[in-house]
Image 1 (cartoon, rainbow, N blue to C red):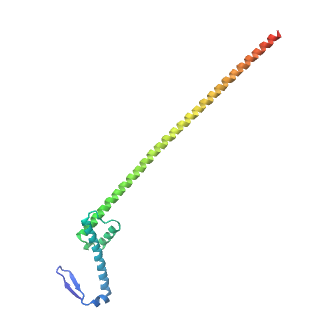
Image 2 (cartoon, helix red, strand yellow):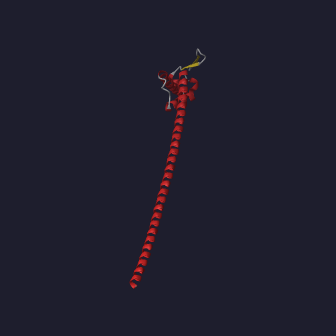
Image 3 (cartoon, helix red, strand yellow):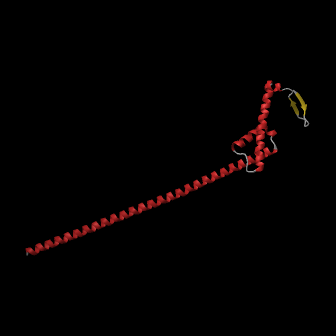
Length: 178
């Protein structure tokens, strides 16, 4: 294993023999972790390249979750394009969430207004139905009173007729008797 200083002050490691990679488990784990990191950062860079070509290619759903995970694990290693893509995607997600909340409030308001209107119509219909019932009862009462009055008038006529017939009958008897 040989180490050397890089031009930018970073340390570089050069493996002297391949057997070291095979037998050194910790080194293999570090290399595997670095491969995963580089693959994930490359994926984010690829998405950022797509976004630069098409500004509508923002990260959403699982891709945004993956981008957030990459930023959480290797935020210091993100490129400028990757950072910009994540910020733009987060901003769009916040905008869409705010829009969804506004739409939900509008739907709730519309449902509430429809309920108020429907309640008003129901109340109006109930009042009209009660008025119709009252008018029908009043009409029935008036008709019943008219029939009672008619009956009383007919009874009076009948009594008068009976009385008149009695008087005539008595007069006729008196006239026969004389």
